Length: 442
Image 1 (cartoon, rainbow, N blue to C red):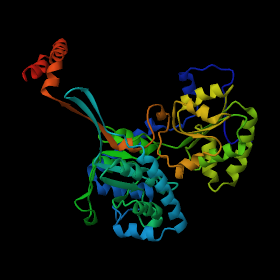
Image 2: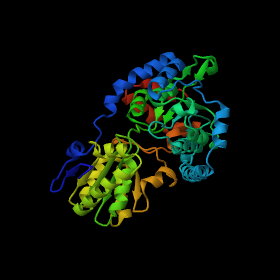
Image 3: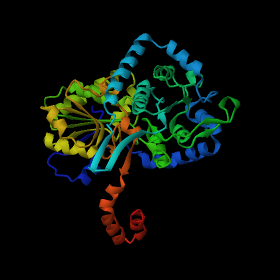
Image 4: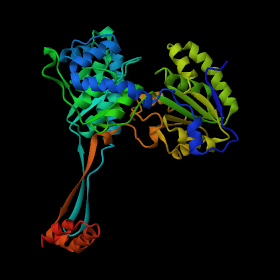
């Protein structure tokens, strides 16, 4: 019995267009979700907090009394946090902070001539909205990934949103709140899904006395992972605000050959499948023996894991597959065309193979760098581009919160040396006033 489909590409020479057509993807993509999300954004923009409460009741099964989490709730969540979990979160914070501190670019000055300088500055945005999912599972680790990157970039104002939980009296999950408290974030909202993206993009007026006149001010950038509806909402507000990427349903691709451990591979495929019914788990291999061994182990693991129904549905979906290829070379072409959010390389000479990858959100090298490590403790960021957007988008980092600004500083003498050339080019473009703006200074 197989719990996952097979796609056999052996003996075929396929163009990128053909590969994109045959590789597994979810049947419901961002394009389809846009139609469902657009009215939500319009409603939040028009009615603010009133719409957020209605949508919380509709989608999360609870009507939040406090859309903005009271400070005492953050403190109580931290005080009640399991010490073992706290230790894990603090270790993750330290590792992620170390990696992201090294990402901050260095400002520099280019001297073109005496008195002619261009300085490169990096300026953080002023306010960001950070989303932490909380539907089928809760992700304090996503709070860490978002907040630490923004803090290391120097962003002065941070707000976090996570869905209200019925079991928590309409507040986000206590571990989410505890993570915010650990990181020193006190602006936290019990708002989930597309409506959280809308609140951050447009701001939200209060509707009840507890909200104040303004519940939430608009932000400059929205980041964080989420389901396909969160991704669709981010697509719709791009341009109103900046976004990191359209981080929709999670996905893993494993490029493995005969040297890989089938148990390791199967465990990693299942670990991604437990995220979401639409999560994608893809194995690309030239080894028929490995494919068969992994498929057999998937049957046992899917039955034994806690979230059996979710895992089985995700593995059986059109977005998951075992893809057979002729060799690792063809496998590289396949995973580059796929552009996985998470790409594991479990082959001979894995580091050299990984160096040749051109499209992936993050690359995990060898048998002891599983995606689970990156989710929590590697120090890398787990907010990554999905759905093929890794072809052009990067994972979350300090760069998502920084703007590059060039500062031009020329003296009179330095401008004089290029004045005639400026006039010549300006006249050629039929913009004579540009040249006159320079000549008039002399």
